[in-house]
Length: 129
Image 1 (cartoon, rainbow, N blue to C red):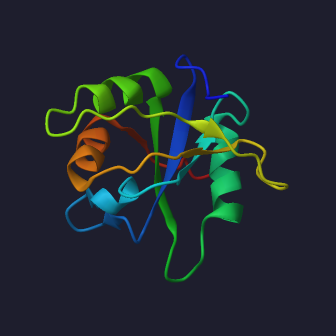
Image 2: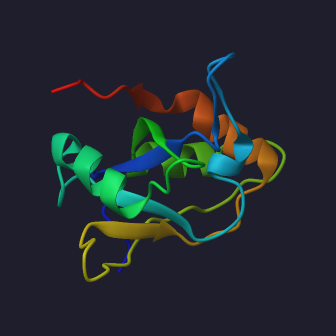
């Protein structure tokens, strides 16, 4: 059963998807299918930083730079309203043993749609402890 549209999700923005010089994100952040995300209803943003450091980072070539968040309902609106190819998007629970908040966006996302999603992400920087 898909995640409710009222939920928010988080996507790790690592060094391989983030250009530090320009501050721009690569469309590959969402392009393709089965895009991994974390459900914030199960793991709040402050805990998601630690989770992504453990589960997503692969130093030194891939380090966590930012986290992008969005509401599932808003993601669905962006997909349905995408002029070039309206796309029904869902977020499906896909819990893993050490990552119970894991979910995927199973649908294939085009480069153009990925860029539309990226423009609407809320981007968070880590607060040093």
